[in-house]
Amino acid sequence: MKQHITVEQRDSLTDKQKYTLAYWLCNYTNKHGGHCCVLPSKPEPSLMDIGQMIEFLDEKRGFIQGGRHLEIPIVGCGQIDPLTFCDDLWDACKEVLEA
Picture 1 (cartoon, rainbow, N blue to C red):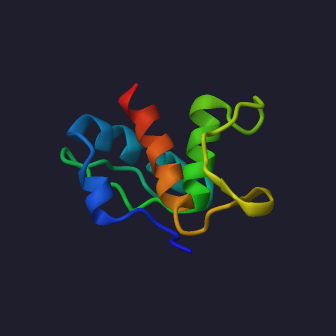
Picture 2: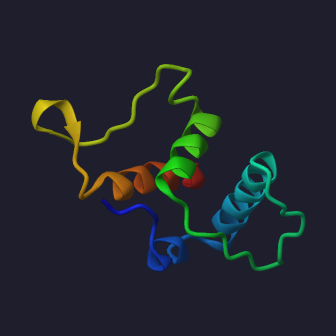
């Protein structure tokens, strides 16, 4: 299963979207015991992983606690498709960043 977005996916963001994402990732890093305090003028956010994308979506849109649902394709027996799950989450994150 793919765990992170690709460089190409990250680079498809506008500079404003990259800044928004870099700012969120900096706060996320600080909240989880890391250190991030300076954002460059042209940010290159790290490559989000599945857990970060889920937290981003929950924080920005309340998908988990608010009972909202993502449009994630489901394969047999109600399971997510491991081949597309990461990309599906990224698509949802991009929608939030474009709003």
